[in-house]
Image 1 (cartoon, one colour):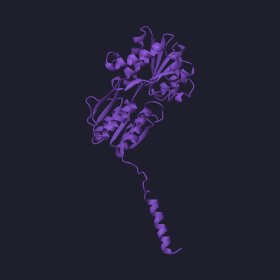
Image 2 (image 1 turned 90 degrees about the horizontal axis):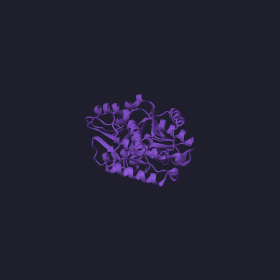
Image 3 (image 1 turned 180 degrees about the horizontal axis):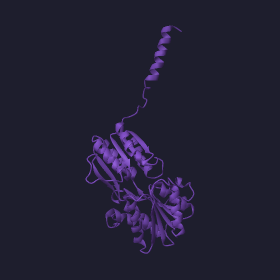
Image 4 (image 1 turned 30 degrees about the horizontal axis):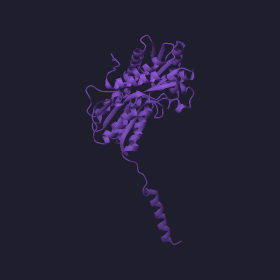
Length: 337
């Protein structure tokens, strides 16, 4: 082989290594970044739903995205800062617990937009949107369903940390149950973590020993551990945030899947997606964006495998309650002191 030919081949190989191939996808600049609360994007509850919204934005809007899974609460600030430094136009924090970290970052980085799930600020911060939900409405529907299905007259709820969103779920649950049966006994507990499935299971077992035959889990993985243990023992359960039949009960493949009668859903995915879309469309606004029955921000998941166990009159009642919550003719009466 002539030297000139060999030299040409060497140059071509080097060029192929150093330059992207024709049509190769290059990393798009970060339009939206997501910081999870403690936990992962496949945790089957809150973080996963937010991540689904981020994925939808990446796919449907053709934008670059990034995410960071928080390992400990002490990491909130540095994780938010990391996404700002990676030039994400909007940084979304998943959860009330990051309220102080987002407030600090918003002042430090006034040119970056921020959003936070389950938290709001008074007065509103100029570059922050609060994504808040009518958890009391979702809890009200869960409680009404539970009271309609109990045979023992006792129902229960395993809550996570005693913060406003969880309080609204549990207070709404009790209000909804009492709207169906005034004398129903409603037992509740708050557990100071969202990630301890074993403690959730212990609480559920304790409630079952006290006669509870429908159990609501409203505490991330802690609540999921509770309803999984209860369902495996043959007790009816209700999930939270997203359809836990699909996540916790593996789309019907896990033991006890026939006992999850619904989930009190918060459309965190839609809130995250619509916020990112507003940024892309140049329509981002600060202040609170409220997701309720009126705009399909909350609701009950399908009955799935338990459908045959739900009486027709109960299904009709659930539809009526949702309609009433949407048009305002039904209110939960829930307030936080």
